[in-house]
Image 1 (cartoon, rainbow, N blue to C red):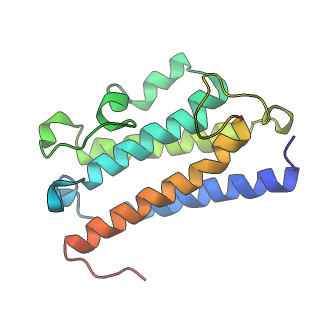
Image 2: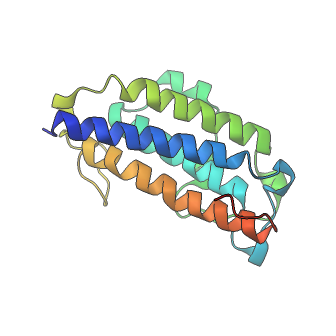
Length: 168
């Protein structure tokens, strides 16, 4: 079982990564969300990917799928934004920037709510289904902030490629 203080630190890191990722999106004009400098990726794909990953790691892997998850608005997100998906320059394939951002906020809020209730004694439970990078619920939650920050960096780079000045 993870140490309670370590679990508290993981929860704080998850929360901080959510807050930083979400607030960083306010620095990107929604009109730029589907621009693809170098034809590699766009902000919309990054947001959709973080949304489905936060759902998968922070909710589904922790407690399984729930009928209430339909309210998160993630239909087709796995296909559009999941691991192995490829960003497309065709914005018509995706939800709007506003919908993507709203759904990100919903998922982040739901993870925060449920994470506060996860029992320390159950965090060493094996994931079902399993995952190649982490074996336990705790390991998955520990990875979540690192994943968010990897994509935060990609959004930062896209911002700069759009001509924006550095934030810090």
